[in-house]
Image 1 (cartoon, rainbow, N blue to C red):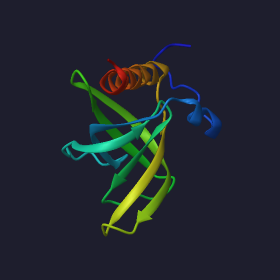
Image 2 (tube, rainbow, N blue to C red; image 1 turned 135 degrees about the horizontal axis):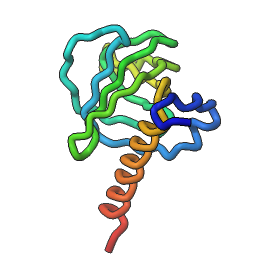
Image 3 (cartoon, rainbow, N blue to C red; image 1 turned 90 degrees about the horizontal axis):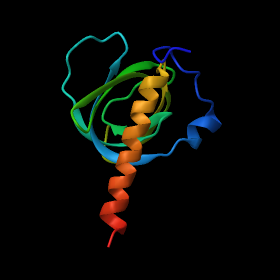
Image 4 (cartoon, rainbow, N blue to C red; image 1 turned 45 degrees about the vertical axis):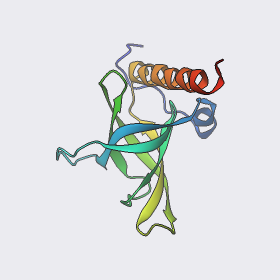
Amino acid sequence: MPSDTPALQPTGKDRREFYRITVPLPIRLQAENDTAEVTLIQRSVNISGGGIGITLNQAFEVNEILSCTLLLPGQVLFKSYLEVLCVDLIPYPPNTYRLHGRFVRMTNQDRELLIRHILKFQREHLNRHYSA
């Protein structure tokens, strides 16, 4: 299969098999058909090769497809689509939501790029906190 074709969608079990890490990243989430140039905002993102979890001040609808743009280390601009799986209202502060989404229509090449960066985040974390 060519590397630019979309990979099979991971199942719920597969998504949990990807290593997850929470890192601060510049991110932009917007409706799939929204073409406005919105600034990337630094957020704490729980990310894996299967999807993300993020706290936002904007509610999205379950099953909505979002355009997701991340600025990875080395100024690598990563773009993918995200299906909203769950949106939880957080009581404080007001108008705060926890969004859980999975990557959709992602090519194998893009997923491998993302996983390489996630592994790099893990190495950096381990070096910072556990090296002598």
